[in-house]
Image 1: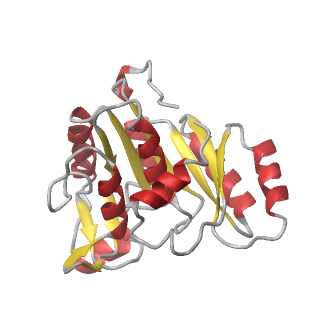
Image 2: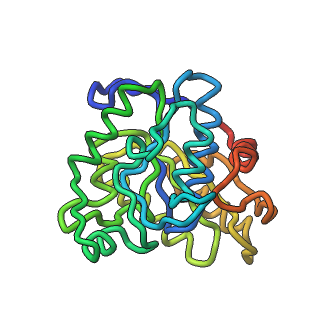
Length: 242
């Protein structure tokens, strides 16, 4: 499902914007799975995140695990500091606008947008992972939803299958539609035991006006340790119908 847009503002290249019903629903895992598929059709595939919040010591280096996972699976060669694929890397795992305010950092929207455009020019296909849910704020004026609207990539919605996900999913779909964006499809990611799992998936399949791209089963804990391994992202890719 390597979409190419007829709209010049979308730069005519393949790619996706991956959003989720909430934080910790598997956006990075699915982003890596989409990159795995895009690599079959495109030579240079990149990943991008406008901002991350949460760094930890990994192999003696303070890193964000999402950025490490995505950089490991893509074919674009990132800088050592990863600032070309993620211009803002905040230390505390919390809402980015709050962490930025506490640390005296201004999340400059133009910096994010220009970093994306630069990376877009150097790649054949790109997967952009959003921040938390669809409308997480960057600061008082801009949100992750604004970023999705400005870059105009087809959107993939990751639904974390847990109690409350139907409401979260449908509200997110409504927000995407309100902005005139294309929902390419959605992924049901099983993030733990759920009562009436298949019935919930069937309900969403009936109510979401976009194809179900795949159902990711609850994967063994040794596979989904973070940062995700290439093996984990390839495993998730095997369940996507694209």
